Length: 98
Image 1 (cartoon, rainbow, N blue to C red):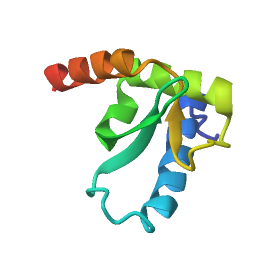
Image 2: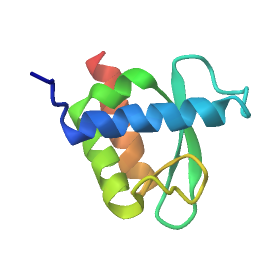
Image 3: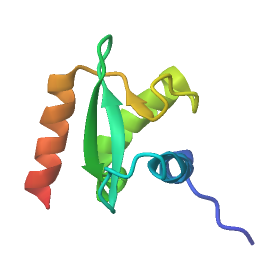
């Protein structure tokens, strides 16, 4: 009997794997964090803790990114297609929950 992981968890694992490979070239990312690019037109780089990948609010953002980009992110890293203000609102609530 095999264990079946929801697609969102597989997505997070694949994102982490891709981010680990790209982070070797970008040594300015602290351990335990990933770089994400946020924005609809202009994209801004944010560093977020890996623990956010398990939070339901952040998972919704990841699902939206997967729908729009799949795993071919134009910025070379994880791209989240939402307004910067919305991203900051979601992540600031994650900090409050910790």
